[in-house]
Image 1 (cartoon, rainbow, N blue to C red):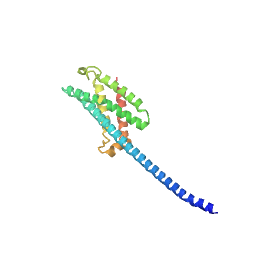
Image 2: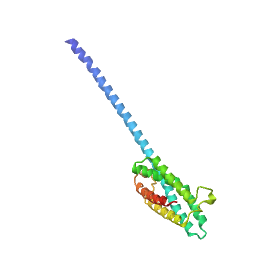
Image 3: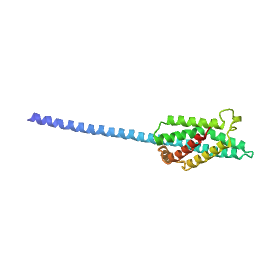
Image 4: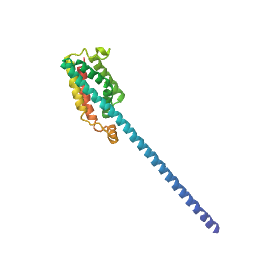
Length: 206
């Protein structure tokens, strides 16, 4: 009888220590999980910020492309010795053409769930077609010499439509706005409208 009582008395402290140790382990595990989760959320927000800033840069360049395409084509149509100025604006537009293609590809990928690489390849090929139509594949001295009035009108109208669509979205200036852009808020529909105007122009190219 005394042996059993002694055994029970010795077991109680052991159980107490076991429970205490278990609680400590559980607490430490929860702290580690919270730290890992916090780091994950911080990294996710940082990635979204960088993605949004990258998109904003592409978007701004796309606007520049469309606006200069419109203005340059308008000057080429007006004549009156303003062709040199028009060619300068068109050259500036062409310098931003890659980012325009990238933006449309990113928008299509996020909106329609297609591979961005496939969309970018298609838009790049279409942009090369525009370069060929405007005569910008050879020496710079001979750029923009071949298009006729009908093509300049198509380029002017498409530039106006694309810039009008893209300007419907106000570019972000704070971190929260960049993260919203990364999430696709606000800019996918204007980009879609710009893509439609672009597709109409491509269909008119020789």
